[in-house]
Length: 96
Image: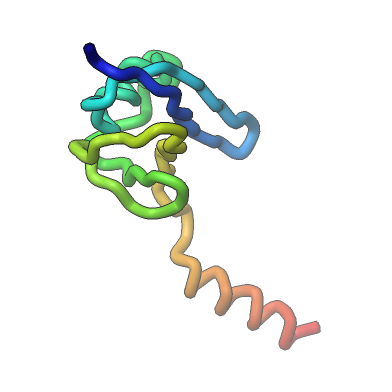
């Protein structure tokens, strides 16, 4: 008998956040759960070969097997490097 448990799939844009809960089998991977969630149909810009993935804020590979209550996160590409953003803020504060 195959055990099932619930996981969450999350994806966020600046104007909307999506959280899908679904029941998966004990041998389900990150990639399989994302595909089953339907998020790829809602957001065709998500490319599992390019977007980074994580479980509770820690990077994960698409073939990682899920555990009960895992929160799978799909990360968007950075718009600006955080170090560059910090430099820009520092320059602005020096001018003021």
